[in-house]
Amino acid sequence: SQELEQSPQSLIVQEGKNLTINCTSSKTLYGLYWYKQKYGEGLIFLMMLQKGGEEKSHEKITAKLDEKKQQSSLHITASQPSHAGIYLCGADWTSSYGKLTFGQGTILTVHP
Amino acid sequence: EAQVTQNPRYLITVTGKKLTVTCSQNMNHEYMSWYRQDPGLGLRQIYYSMNVEVTDKGDVPEGYKVSRKEKRNFPLILESPSPNQTSLYFCASSIRDRLTPNSPLHFGNGTRLTVT
Image 1 (tube, rainbow over the protein chains, first blue to last red):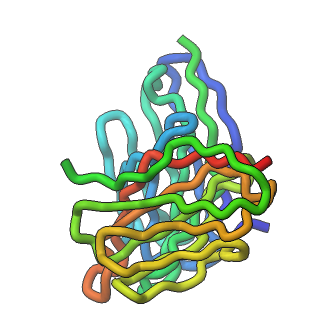
Image 2: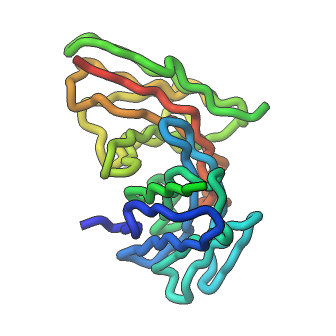
């Protein structure tokens, strides 16, 4: 089983619809990172969350970290075709900064 | 422009032929790391380096070597590539250090390796 589980694995939505991607950790998080990747390309950093209950927004994308710091959600409002891609969450489980573990990713398709 | 540069972008090779994928960053970051990405498995960390001459294993280090002789470069070496190392490889760097341990990674554009 994955220590960092993303759900759903894939998501197909109609343009204009809202959607949520979840990232669940088996351990308490010191840092949680959201990235977006266009197919076959590099990862673009979206947001970082550290504090329980923290919420950050960038344009139409909002990310939250729950109070227990074991789950994060990424919410896209009024989705557009430009939002399509792979969304990955990454986790720091300690203050030791060597390893950063990623989830398996969520493939988002937005139909015009 | 601040960036992480990987070369080559695409590489096709045969089993057993040694190869090196280069990675360079111009942000003066102490921390660098290599990942591989495979369908259904996400990104898995191969090796990371917290500073010059300091390297450590990630989750899937078998079959790979790295070196960190200078701050800006972190090459990934496959001494004897095998087909199961066919993958998309990413290099990353970060300002992560003891004072700011939880900082995001900046990724290169990836190297798609095929081993036949």
